[in-house]
Image: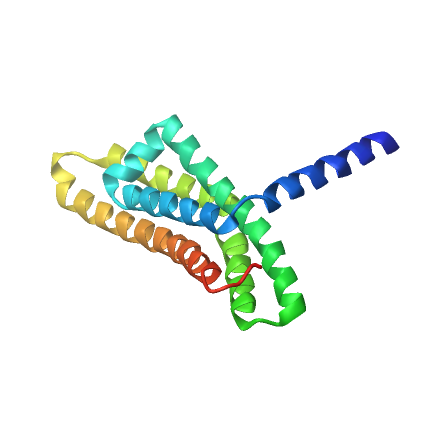
Length: 171
């Protein structure tokens, strides 16, 4: 058991060392652009319908969010170390924004929200007929408004973290 724990610690140190050799600013920039593109694609009826109906698209989107959260957690520890030594205000703001993203907009929260949205979409589609066209259009607008609000919140958090890191000195 001791050997297994030692092996686990060794693995963690290798992962940490490998991530230190990565340009985290470039990684966060890339993930931010990829999320912005994904969010734009999701922000309308057709986009969410594609998400709900296409397993590959769902998988790609969830994987992207998992990567964002992974790298934001890595960034958090780097910025925390900087804040501990310098009490830098930009570092403090970055930490606060990462905490908000990681708690309020976690992948699990996104999955719960999007699952509810896919269920609502199905109800709207199942209830649609020629007599209910106006109600259908109203339901779709309401649905899109809620979806866009949530996606904008996530996008704002991801974009603001990306903006913060360009104001931090990591040397």
